[in-house]
Length: 304
Ligand SMILES: N[C@@H](CCC(=O)N[C@@H](CS)C(=O)NCC(=O)O)C(=O)O
Image (tube, rainbow, N blue to C red; front, side, top):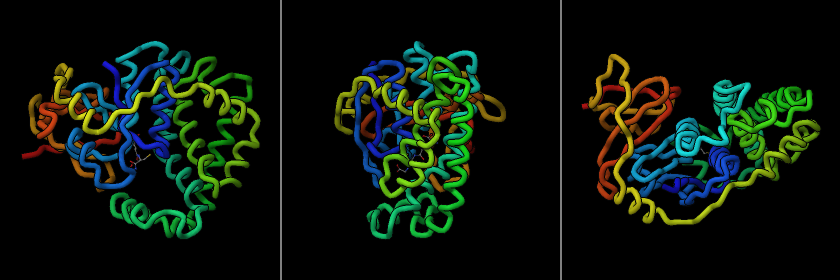
């Protein structure tokens, strides 16, 4: 079944997945979603998770790039996004790039914007949902730029022995993590000075060109209503997996991004172990859907 990416063009985490499709040479369907709330079609499918991106495979929704990459590996194992010799270490590096380093790159990219460059609705959305005050970001920007430039220095040093990608000859999840952060800074013209400092690193610049050349695979546009119809016609593929104590299979739980004010997703546990979390829920318009999360970074609480 062709995977469906719910995303918007300017989203760095979405770019990570689009290039993952490129590495795997996959065909995929694209649903463009709003970059602020409300997102009625997306939330209908996920049960509350509203971050970007989300990957849909039939009636299975994969929330967060960590769960998305995991699902893509299962759907099409080759070429792997965890090539040797790094293997699983790719995941650890990508987690660092998508965690602390993500905020540094947001600051480097958006902190340089003059007042009025962003619509007020966007500023209010990010303040209300994430406590991110974009109007105050410029004060923290020099520090955040220094953190992003340190990562650029490390990446360049990693590549200095002539390797093509972070782990050697083949690109993987770690490359995607670094790439989408730098891509975001490069995309914002106001951040030109920081981008220039990053691209002054010759190994980084050559690696970036290799990553960019990978492309996005084969993209086909569909609507949010199409995606809901596809989910309604499918049944969740999720086979029940292990459920770690103190939780039990079938238990009603809430899953929520740690340290966030995000809306929790409520459903019955199908799986809960270090490889991920899956809950089953009913959607009014799509019927039974399975919603998948990574274990790291998600809080699970008993519900009901
Ligand atoms: N840990 C998540 C983070 C996703 C995330 O924070 N995405 C940003 C956009 S790139 C977001 O959701 N922004 C708010 C929105 O799109 O409504 C992942 O890896 O997918």
